[in-house]
Image 1 (cartoon, rainbow, N blue to C red):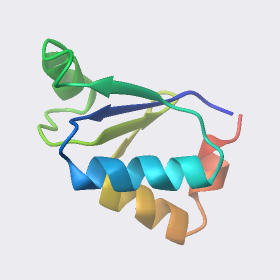
Image 2 (image 1 turned 120 degrees about the vertical axis):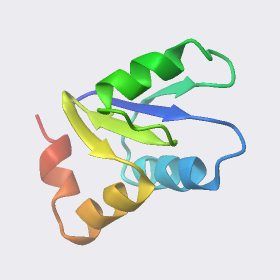
Image 3 (image 1 turned 180 degrees about the vertical axis):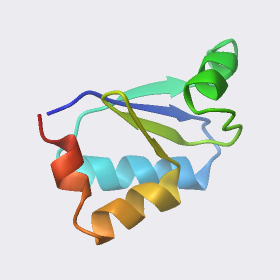
Image 4 (image 1 turned 90 degrees about the vertical axis):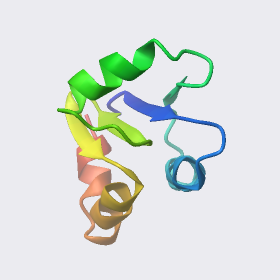
Length: 85
């Protein structure tokens, strides 16, 4: 399985929903909390081509986007293939 990284904040409902979906699929992920590491916001924005909102989700080197995009990939049946090595 490809590594998954998700930039989050603790009060973000969309962050919690994205993490719930990944966890329900048995996907382990690295959570980067911008509340605990605010200096990572610039890194997140650079990696996401200017994305300012959380969550920002990466599967391997692929920028998925946010929670809505993650759920859309899952609904379309494309998330499992993206996660596979």
